[in-house]
Length: 283
Image 1 (tube, helix red, strand yellow):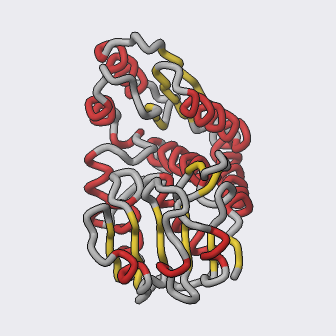
Image 2 (image 1 turned 45 degrees about the vertical axis):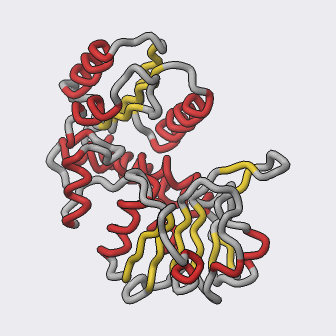
């Protein structure tokens, strides 16, 4: 068994982005990312801070718009429109979740698809479906980088994705399919779940249930990717996979923390770089 080091893979992605950014700057182009956060959700605050740090690390220009929880839909929409029209802002990201009175779909739909670095816009989602995309959702894209880092060829492998969310599960299945895996998605209504997961050469767990995946659900020698970010009975950070029991069975596994987590923001940096190149006709 080998642990897939998300921090190391993430570092290599950021180094690649930083090098390309330096070349862009020689042409007078600095990639710019605008992050909007509404209200004071503590987890969101941490994510936004980490995004700011990552922008600094790779040489991007970044702006943060911290709006009060009382912000109206009209005010939020107006800000997005303003950012859509600015040439120095290549990527727009609205941190979710939004306060209950705001419609996240409305905001996502307003973001110009060429600046949709989260890849949540319906146009981006459709492009991923047909395999003709500019941006990939950050977490699934990061997971593909982690799988590639193992040196295992995805072609022909049986992949099982646990979870059908729009942010991870569904796009993850499409990315695996684009690389010629045979893909099955499981969810809360799936029958004979363990039988299905035991067939997986690549198992991606994204269900939000602490230590749900146990050794008896995993095929010998499988690659196991744990997307979960949960707390165990002692309040300790853990994933959807019972790491200690599953690690003995698989060929590669991601830890929590230090696996998928670091990849998400690095892929956001990659998407923002791509956006800057597209908007300057360099891609």
